[in-house]
Length: 173
Length: 173
DNA sequence: CAAATTTCAGCGCAACTGATATCA
DNA sequence: CTGATATCAGTTACGCTGAAATTT
Image (tube, rainbow over all chains, first blue to last red; front, top):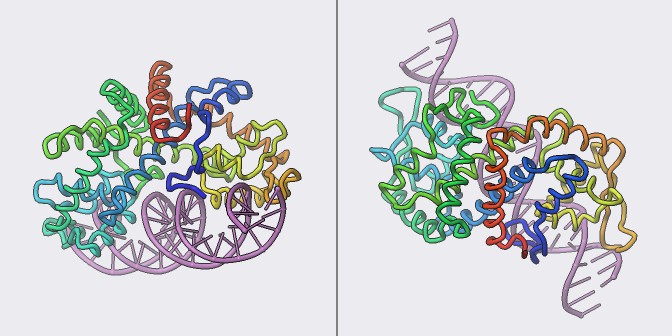
């Protein structure tokens, strides 16, 4: 039996990544990069499980929540699907899929883009707007599962990961 | 058209997470937690895409690579499936699946656990050992896609994420 | 007997490929 | 015409649930 975080019911009595790092040093060499990479993988898994659990009350996944937030931020509450894909860095077919499900849930509508006959616009409904606000309040109340980090830690992690993203070509800045 | 990182072909001219943080501050309030959470999600996606691309030469996914590394670290090159699941924090059914595919690829074998008739052992084959070593050399040569981080940055990120993992109940230490 | 280990069938989500329709 | 936008069908990977078989 496991919990929704993909973890055996009883936590390990030691840090598995630290342990892997020790063995890695003995066998392969420097373990610092591997430890960071593995940590990112594991924390992503933990956070996603927490977020999806919190969002279950609104019947949306974290990926769909991100779409709602993006639309909420736009001036008119609507955006071309292309822009959604660019900003959220998701595949066009995934955008199509997310949008279809959000439409089915009554949280957004879609209509042709008057400015470009090829494209479509996704637009928040009143219900969608309520859901973004309520879901966001819940996630913020849970501090995005990051209460273990103080302000300095948050800034540091953000800055370091920003450098990784930039080096990977995510954006030019 | 997108690249395997799920990103539009041309990178954005600004940091989408930083931009989201600004809008978040205006609409919702403190954005520090959201920025860290979103960064972790995005970096995980980037790293995984890089790793999977590097491992494609060996026809394994990163998840399966992790199984091979774990077995390589064990004294006999074999471990009960249960231990594999605990250490890698993956669901029992996912272990079954990974193991089946690694067996099919000739990288491990499985046999009943002599010490516990209920369980099974996964054991590295000679080919599996070669693959772990070669794949590891490739990933280390690529510095796990983390060359943007210096040693202080790596230590900081690891320590901060470790606190998050611990707070989430991943291990007691 | 109850508990542990693993498998199996089936579902959901998301990324990806390749092909296609439509429009700039 | 080309390139861009988006959809659709189909594949794969992986996590999860619920049920079952086997053994402790």
